[in-house]
Image 1 (tube, rainbow, N blue to C red):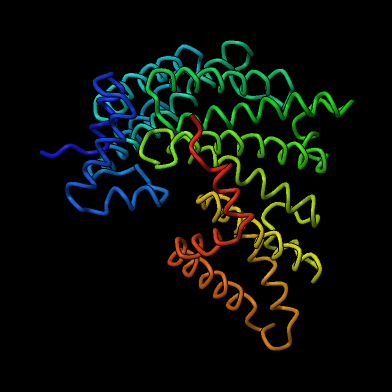
Image 2: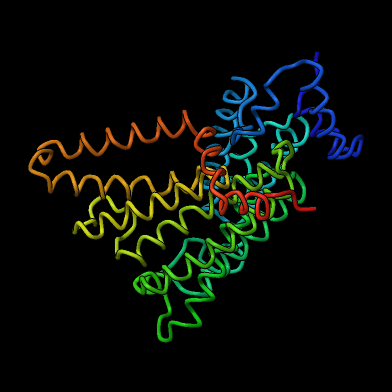
Length: 361
């Protein structure tokens, strides 16, 4: 049996080797074998989710176990103690899957279930009745703070990168409630908060940029993308992307979430395309695709409106817009690295790469 990067991760966790030694061993493997497998991994956003079909099999088992826990809690009317018992069960499952076997997808399902059960149990214990009533700020704070606490506890024990996504999401939610509570006098419900769309968009943009900055800092710590840090950065980019994109589109053009049916003028359509091009450059420079994926629906809405406004393509606007997006995505995916090399010939972008994306010690 040969050593893999997953084995080296375990060795780092157990202090058998250091993170620098892990990177050096991977570099030595490249040199000795002449294989491009590790080198190509450094140029891609690697999904370290599946090591074999057994991961899928285990994920199905965990999902069934979660269902059994929900049904068991239902027998006891979702009391705090029954939900806590379900959470303990998910913790024990995580001890096997996340610590001993290091299986990503089953561990992610277990993590979601654990946080869900603990948050619901905390809510049931601190506020009676168990079921959520009409949205009040006390309940909202209870849920989000509990989610932050339990997700953090899960990460401290299991070091699962996905749990950082849950930590970040709950932190953003806590900040949103506090921000809207401070600036929206007279509004006492979450539903009321979301009606103040400009404030929501401003908060989403600011919080998204903060998460993005944290993700970039973590990326700088591991420019070769060989350690767990790159997985953490991936999840933070995934969290930041929709916050930034949806807020930016709304503040710049007035387009609401998704943009599929809210692009109503040619001016807004071309604004969307211009913003999408700018986001594409950002994605290429930082070598992360999440921000592009978050913006695809807006691009689709803009292309659909332009096509439907044309006398040549109005009858097939959906086909034209979907085909253009498909060609763009495939072309960008195939030529990603070549396009990046071309972009870095531009002095400004090359300077950004050297100063912003270089290794952070």
